Amino acid sequence: MTTKGSIFNCRKGVSFRLPLTDDLPSRLTCRLVVHARIGAAETAGWWSTNHEARLMISGSTSIPLSQIERIDVIRSDKTVLTTLTNTTR
Image (cartoon, rainbow, N blue to C red; front, side):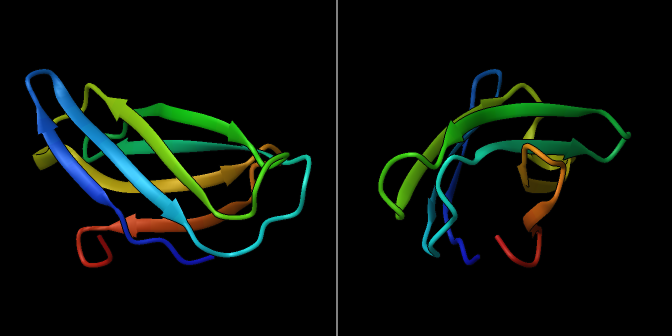
């Protein structure tokens, strides 16, 4: 899976817009999980792949951008599909 998206600072955290560009199997539920440098994690969004193969995922987190260690796209079976870090975003 490849993704290249936008991350925006907000008053109380960060908003995301991530296009997922590879075909995913249908009937999959995925989550966008944001990991903070201090070890905390927040689910910033979730979606189902029951629709079109190319999706634009939006989400938000209260974790400040400067404190984000990584962002994972995770399937419902906890398989990590892709990870965004400071060098990949």
